[in-house]
Structures are given as structure tokens and as C-alpha cells.
Length: 336
Ligand code: LMR
Image (cartoon, rainbow, N blue to C red):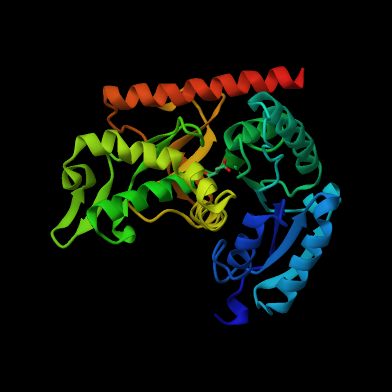
């Protein structure tokens, strides 16, 4: 692509950039994998003081990569400076769960962090900035951000379930021995936690005989209702067990896919899963951040409507919604 057709640069903030996911996602952003090959970027990295030396090192490496689309790097511990005029935000920063820590304690630490981030973004970010929360508990962190940044449109605050979506595509493609790129339209419903509901009922596989239902090709309801679901639900834990740290490369890759499709659009006939502010679609309570199937066009997502939901799915969708309502209540009790 020649310089004359490049768009004007945009600013993207990555919080917790010095961590593992940050290290994996930087080249994806700076090489145009996230926002497109014609979109120059200025990267803002926000880290806590104890990580600032490491983020300084990351900045050096980015400079040393001589990437033509990279038009600037700001590495800072100053929240206002980090948020200044940013158009896109990927939030990796969160308080990590330590051994022996209660769920409520983890939630309360993160709720405090996301409440503070909300005010900073509201004051300093560009109007209409688009936000992806990756750090756990991702749905509830995103909800807190939404609640405390009332001037940011709720549609602009999302959380990552594309990782689970991609995991579900991966499991189906392995099972059917097809290319992962030939499988589409799985759905992750609900929370990015072990109550999420990976749903293959509407998934489609491209074959030499045209598009086929994944469900019919698998032809094994026991697997689809059992191992398929539990493998996807437990994948994050399995990776932590194997790597002794949580998924990084796949999380970075999914965050990149999420932003890419949100901003540049989903292909015709294809949907993806995103954690978005529920408006009550599919009978899911309004006012939580819940993962739905969405299509994206011109930077706006819309929930795919009218999918048939059977009783098995309904129960699973409600269970994960209930967990999110509980998390929301817990988050509020931490704030009071
Ligand atoms: C993942 O899905 O890989 C992570 O969210 C797991 C975790 O708890 O960090």
C-alpha cells in the first residue's frame, strides 16, 4: 500500500501493556492486523509503576522493529496522559488472582480499578472511543466501566469472548478434521467464565458440497452437549495448568480479531461473539454485559436476531446470565 492511501493515524491505548498479552498483541497492532494495513497507529501503553521499566523495554523493542504503520509510542504510568485523545482501548490491566484469594476480594480490587479507569477515559479519551475489556472478570469489569463513564455510549464498551468463540471453532474443526477457516457461526453466550455456553447448534461448515450444518456433520449429540462444551469452558484453566500462566498468544489474537471485526465489519453471512450491553435480547436480563452473536458494520455491532433456542440452550443461557447478575450485585456491594 502506498503512503498516499494511508488513513490519518489513530491512537490506541493498551492498559497493562507490559504483561504477557501485551507483549503478544503489540506486533499485531503495529503491523495492522487489528485495524487494517492502511491504518497508521500511535500506541499508548499504560502500566503501574512496578511495570514501567518493562514497558520502557517494550517501547524500545517496538522502535527497533522499524514498523512503517507505527507512528509513535507513549509508555506512561500517568492515567491522564495515557487516555489522552485515544480512539481505541484494549484493557489488559487487572488485579491478578493470588493464591488463597476469595472471588469477592478479586472482584472488589478490579471493580476499584475499573471505576477509576472509567473516569479517566471519560475525561480524556476521544469522543466515540471504542473499548474492549480483556482482564477478568471481563464482563463485570466492562459493566463497571460503563456505569462510571456515562458519557461514553454503552455500545462502545465491550468485553472479550472471541477467545472462547475461537476455541469453539478450533474444537469443531479438530473433531471434523476440516480447516478452522471453513467453520463459522458458533456462539458463546454469557459470561467469560466456566458458566459460558458454547453453542454449536447454528454453526456451519464449508464443504465441497456446499455449506452444511456442523451439528449434522458431527452427528453426536452426546459430544456436542458434553465434551465440546466443557472443553471450551475449561480451556483457560487447562492452559494455566499446562503453561503455569494464563493464555496470552490466543488471548492477544482473539482481542485483535474482536477489534478488527468490530471496526472493519464481519463478512456477509458470518457472525462472531462479543460481550455487549444487553438490551434484553433472547430474554437475557437487560443491564449486564453478556456475550451474544453479533454482526458488525461500519463500526457498529448488532445482535443477531431470531435464532431458534431449544430448551437445553435456554437453561444454559439462563445459568450464565444468573452468574452475571450475581457478579453485578457483588460488584455493587464492593463499591458501597
Ligand atoms: C482464559 O480464558 O484463558 C483466561 O480468561 C483464563 C484466566 O482465568 O486467566
